[in-house]
Length: 152
Image (cartoon, rainbow, N blue to C red; front, side):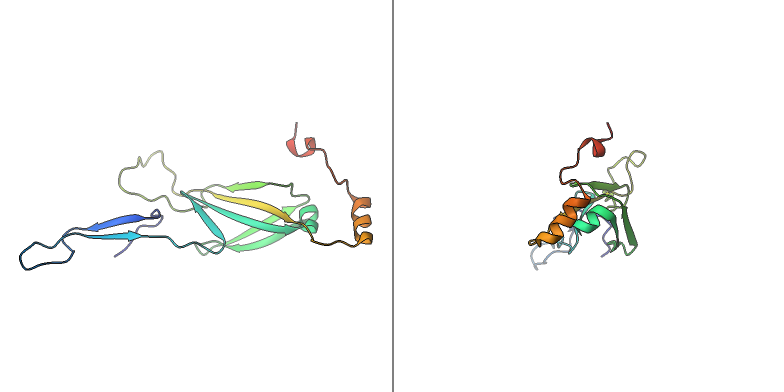
């Protein structure tokens, strides 16, 4: 049996006449239900994929690079230069799950793939020596104005 890419969680396939046969009755239908297992890094939301990337304070301030193996086998190179603001989400269009074709969708309007949503989280240290804190506070403002990020 070949399953089409992108089939949803709890997807059912009905094989007509392939169920258990009894000598006095016709064979019934065989109903297969597929449960998707969770992935170590990606979370599926419909046709979209979500990825959470953790970064250090230094990476959040200076930038970083991550190489991520996509579930389709391609390598995604995530490059952030400069400051990555708290709560940033990047959307990579058409890099999510294949959109399952059950034969009822309008082929002209539908996309081929969902999107990949990348959420960035800064991991703060649990301890900090006072001399390190003074170096940090001397170099940056601890409460930056949001106007810088809102581009107003």
